[in-house]
Image (cartoon, rainbow, N blue to C red):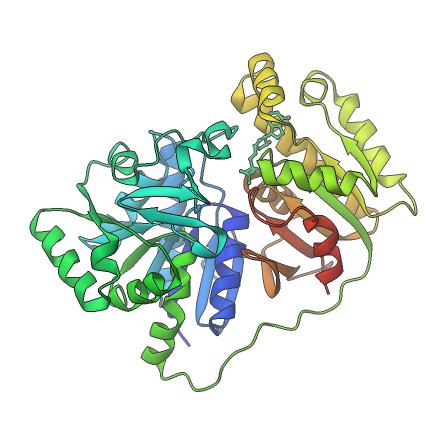
Amino acid sequence: MPITLGCIADDFTGATDLANMLVKGGLKTIQLLGTPSKNDVVPSVDAVIIALKTRTIPVEDAIEQSLQAMNWLKNAGAKQFFFKYCSTFDSTDEGNIGPVIDALMAGLETQFTIACPAFPETERTIFKGHLFVGDKLLSDSPMKDHPLTPMTDSNLVSTLSRQTSQKVGLVEYTNISGGPSEIRKAFNQLQKEDVAIAVTDVLNDEHLYFLGEAVKDFKLITGGSGIALGLPSQLKSHKNHKEETTVHKLPEVLGKELILSGSCSEMTLAQVNEFSKKYCTLKLNPVELAESNSALDKAVDWVIQAKGKEPILVYASAPPDAVKEVQQRLGRDLASITVENALAKIARAAVQNGFRRIVVAGGETAGAVVSNLGIKGIMIGEQIDPGVPTTVSIGNPSIGLVLKSGNFGSADFFEKALKVMP
Ligand code: ADP
């Protein structure tokens, strides 16, 4: 059976967040980590999400990998495509959101799409084209200090315009709240003005349902996982779905428990702090890791020898000043790669030593960890906090995984995640 919705996500935690939304909406969904080879069997599901790690890699590589995923999904029969990026529009003036949208539009031969990172459930709203995180403009939110994609302009029309040669326009909330037909009229008007990508205001969930209806015939939709709220009902009516699919009951996974955190987001720092009050933790020093291999060996030994103290936490997470200092010493890219590689290697050694229940904080970090574990796909289970479900890897050994974007989850998230995991 061909799939209905083919999704391409620019990071692993974001893909999981999207899968969570689609599953909650009743679509049978599978998340694949990376593009499978041509001969891999197409799973019989409604939606396939291909999780990539393309958010901060060079633009040309991001385009190439996204097109490869798009072609795989096309071959699998996808009717509609969704390019998923972060609800805080994580990108730089070089990309990669704009260039990937351009490439997918060309690849799918479509002249018009939307760009809508809004996710009201997690307080990401768009008003007159400006992205808000809670009651702060994006540029005043902690995202201004992100180690890789500091966001300093909240105006999505200007931010995206700097990343694409196509014309970007705006559909304001006044049109959005008028419902699907008003929205379609606004789209038509923008197309007459040669706009190719419409940023859409969204203040609440009703707006997302209206948008879902208005874009139901679009070949390509782009945005955060919030948009997925309004899609399943459209897709199900297309297919005359009768049964209401419930969230997968995941198999129980037994084994030692580990938290790995490479996210420096404000929320993650609070979560690391909260967890540290009760459990054993190890703080990594990126400069030491970059300068000698023995620092990583020591960290691996610490994890393996924790014996009985689990759950344990290994983290590189640090506040903005400390991150800046490390970046000045090592350079931004080496700092990130050093931390990502270290956590990925620790994860691998941990699995070889009986750890089977792993929580990872950080989108880039999760990408590095899951790739190094050689995991090809995950099944999606119950939601722990908005945007973060439990998951279990497909294949052997089965690993219980929770992949959390930096800003998601409550302060007690790590402990809660381990409790909710099957
Ligand atoms: P988030 O989901 O919060 O954006 P990510 O994992 O996507 O988290 O991004 C955080 C980046 O910061 C990663 O590339 C990570 O390797 C890097 N990083 C983590 N700790 C430090 C540190 N102490 N100094 C510099 N960079 C760090």
